[in-house]
Image 1: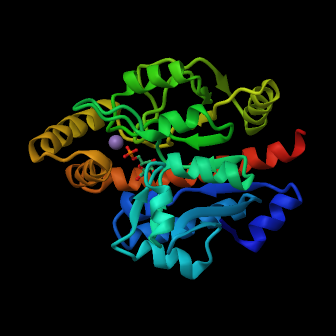
Image 2: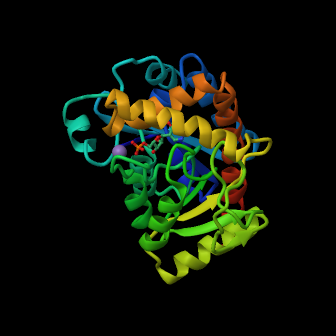
Length: 295
Ligand code: PSU
Ligand code: MN
């Protein structure tokens, strides 16, 4: 594992660091939007007073905090794989490059000593056929704070929420009592807890850490100016049926559905995706800063 010197120094000095994932760069957004987004997220974290650490697999090495040219490399490498836990060892041994999913980024960020991680939407339970993201299990066994805009809208939200409860992932609605649904700010599903500031989120995470709870604290940050829930659900239904008909499954399913949503919505879901990623990076930086005040 190679840490960017700036990240290593910030961690040694107990300063605020925010981990960022890279599957959204390699598989989530089309080029050249993906690189612009990656650069914007790092700048957003910096403007908010924290140090960004984008995590990726580069030529068989785990890199925590990419150099600008490394960010360009991974964003433009069409052969970059999607790193989850089931292929991480093989990717390293075989010298491959890959974007890291929420599952892999959670594991690697925690290993590097980073406490806060920002993403867009987490993976979860797909409606059918059976497919459940490794994100859920990894969040259940890694005590890190993750900021997202909710489970991705392509998922079965009720089933995903049930799994998060069963797995003991701590859920905090950020200024909301209901589960945010990625492209949409809200859904019909109530959350167990709510916080109204970065400080409160930091305190809840510290309390969970103090007890030694094994899992992550997931801060659910509703998108501002999102898309209507029912509208997104209609696009999702169509895209899901098309995926089933085309026989798309496994790790190709999430990227396929996100692409189809973008087409069906005339690009509206991509615009929403960019906005929520930026908002999550900003909130994550604020929480990382708040954590440096509460020891
Ligand atoms: N959030 C986004 N776009 C994405 C993803 C999240 O806005 O592309 C990625 C994350 O890396 C997440 C992954 O971990 O999709 C989920 O893939 P799967 O369902 O195959 O676990
Ligand atoms: Mn899957």
